[in-house]
Figure (spheres, rainbow, N blue to C red):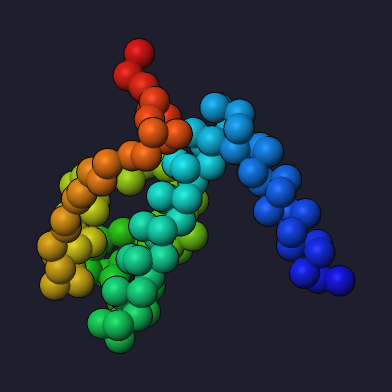
Length: 109
């Protein structure tokens, strides 16, 4: 029964993703969550608590929590560079090619 329910969710999501605005916001949130998860993973691999990283960055533990739960809307390149540096990491950015059905997702207006 759960398998049928999952199929319905996937089908529903597929329908929603046909809406250009929904798809744009969905992709934005997917990227935010992936970034948040990666930061949390790297912090944990470094055997640091959120409060430890917060002290290194001179920010609150709550701000680190917001970052790691994709709730921080004010993340800047400088903040990301500071987080990476505090964790002994650098940042690598890539811009992979979009498939033909994804092109135009983020149009500059």
